[in-house]
Amino acid sequence: MKVLLLNTSPHQQGCTYTALREVEKTLQEGGVETQLIWAGNNVQGGCMSCMVCRKTKKCAKNDIVNDLIPLFEEADGLVIGSPVHFASATGTAACVVDRLFYASRVDKRMKVGACVVSCRRGGASATFDELNKYFTISGMPVASSQYWNSVHGYTPEDVMKDKEGMQTMRTLGRNMAFLIKSIKLGKEAYGLPEVEEWERTNFIQ
Image (cartoon, rainbow, N blue to C red; front, side, top):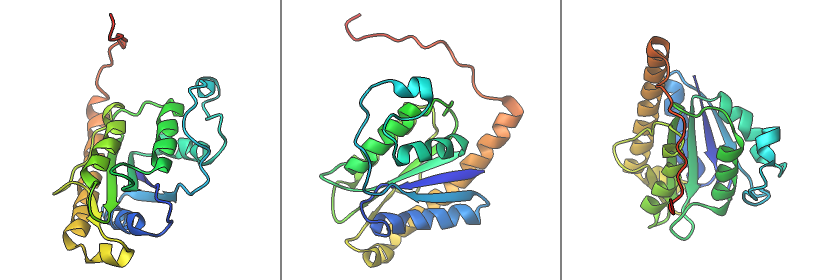
């Protein structure tokens, strides 16, 4: 069992990293292997809808996304971490996660998803909602916590002082570990749910 944690902050070890590390440590305590990766600041933009990935199973833009695709496909869960920029996720988050989910052709059903948000003051719930949509469109169960998964602070030291926020991260880690283990047992006993052929319907029809 393994969880990939993705830090999309422009700062490698800032507030978002501090929150993700708390989740990571708790997952590890629960017997789940983890890999925490920083997306960096050299992402080559968003999806161009060029459809190259449909043939190559890789993004035409050769950056960290192509490194993440096999890691995501092998993982049992994904945690996306982002700070709040103008009441939404970072541009890096949008570029990387759009392309990661589109270029990865693996069946994502029953991989467990969660997001973690850091903010100085506001915009956390809007960013939280934005990131969770990647999971719910992909058949991925969303791990929840005791509150929305956010921490507050301007520095990592501030975040460490956010006792409720850090407790929320630990609760998320425990819940995610439990959900991954439960799904593993369920898949072994019952397999995955039946999939219907997708009825693609345009709004004008």
